[in-house]
Amino acid sequence: MKIAVDAMGGDFAPEAIVEGVMMAAAALPEGVTIVLIGKQSVVQELVNKHKTETVSNVELVNADDVIEMSEHPTKALSQKPNSSIGVGFKLLKDAQVQAFCSAGNTGAMHVGALFSIKAIEGVLRPCIAGFVPQITGGHAVMLDIGANADCKPEMLCQFGEIGSIYAQYTFGIERPRVALMNIGSEEQKGSLVAQAAHQLLKDSRRINFVGNIEGGDFFAGKTDVIVTDGFTGNTMFKLGESFHSIATQRGLSDEFIDKTNYESVGGSPILGVNGNVIIAHGISSPLAIKNMIGLAIRQVESDAYTKIAQVLA
Amino acid sequence: MKIAVDAMGGDFAPEAIVEGVMMAAAALPEGVTIVLIGKQSVVQELVNKHKTETVSNVELVNADDVIEMSEHPTKALSQKPNSSIGVGFKLLKDAQVQAFCSAGNTGAMHVGALFSIKAIEGVLRPCIAGFVPQITGGHAVMLDIGANADCKPEMLCQFGEIGSIYAQYTFGIERPRVALMNIGSEEQKGSLVAQAAHQLLKDSRRINFVGNIEGGDFFAGKTDVIVTDGFTGNTMFKLGESFHSIATQRGLSDEFIDKTNYESVGGSPILGVNGNVIIAHGISSPLAIKNMIGLAIRQVESDAYTKIAQVLA
Image (cartoon, rainbow over all chains, first blue to last red; front, side, top):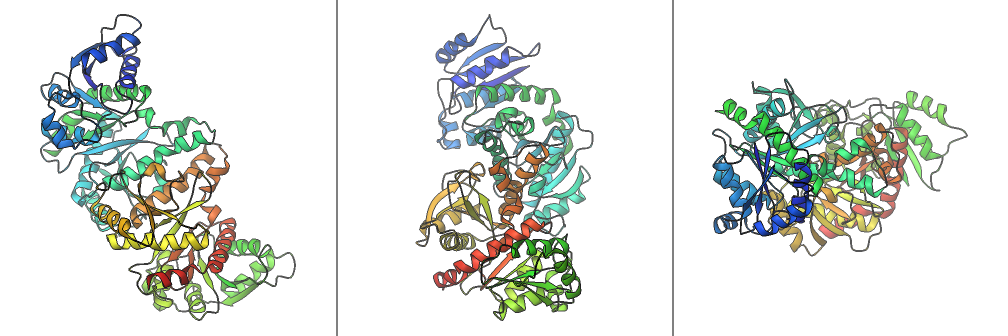
């Protein structure tokens, strides 16, 4: 198994990325290799700086260019095919690697996935999934947390189906509960899109729909999959992540609140595409990168995207 | 000054409501009276149970009917004019009281306000405002937190103007900062409505628009007014309130996190109507009711709705 990681993407790249990769490399399962993509001279130097002994599970692939955070995604990808992101998607598309992860330009990662490995046939719109720690243990999969700010009801229903398959195969939950984030428990509550989505989710034979949940249920352990549009998802998810920083500012330390820290999961997968693509926060620390790689490995092992393709075909 | 309180609305009414009223009564400013509306026999008994000495600042007004939490708002109001909510709005409309508060059927409170005291001329849609504690001190006014699940950009711009006036007169902030909740800092980020609202807010001469904020900035002290649609507002606001319950479940206690507890402010005003109307959570405790009454008094003193009417006329 090869996990490709963009060494050049992120506010603290390449240093933080390489450090995180080396942390992961020290504890990688047998048979797993990390492929670091970036300006080889720079990356090699950083790898040398962090390795304690001869590292055999980290490979370097050169990429001369870098897509900056502020660049327009589509333009940048077409103008910079030799960017670390461009090269990463080429490797993924050519099945040279089984996953590609980056803390770089999110738009470029999303567009790059659509152009290279493409959306799964039948998927209306790929989305980004986040993992929300539940007070009862484990995580709920929340989607969409940012790819699609405006959604049609059919997209939301599909997020429910995709999220359910992901939770089943990646988390091992037999019959994942799927809930719709809303502003009341009744069916007729919420925006027009939410009301229509509620009916579609209710009628879907592919999921175990448990109805609406509200903002206060975010961490409550009432569901395994939280369906919402990308605007609501992004604002809520980031608010949830701030719990940890608020607690830290107040000098509080707690095992559960620590799980709301973005570092603890490390990355968010793009779901609904023909491959494993994981994006991480621009501010990603080495620990976040390390955990993102762990997520990538689990996702490759689960082969979730193949299962999603089978169901939606 | 007379503050009317619905004794019959809420999951723990009338006991919790009367207890909260009596707590408030023990510390009311000179010249303020609370008018308790409900089934007089029941309410009188509860008042007697809680009073320690002769109470001169609580009056009772009879209302034979009750609008239940699950009833359809418009139907219930027209069929039950003698409900505690119906009577409350009549008193408010007739200027017998200067504010009306209830933990009962929110839809009925909203519709009742529109029917009785009506929307301020020029207001597209009244909204509900919530107070979000800021880590830097004080609160930000967030609107809309639930009245309008689907919003047009013009409504969002108006929420910004209404919130700014409210913050100026009720919180005493000279030139309130107004921000748009969004999923990125750039102007072109977000849903179509958010993008259009951003431009309108930017162009408004009535406000000090500081641009977009993101979910992680919710408590951060970056703004005095947070503008959003009722769906995003409701889900985020309830998620923010859950911080306190999560902390409590984890055995943590902190002065700032305590402020995220719904009880600490106690109520949410309906803004954009010709009068002071405050709604409280159905689950309101006596402490929440007490604090809601304090908010009502401050709001009456600030005369915010008159100022809003003047600006928007």
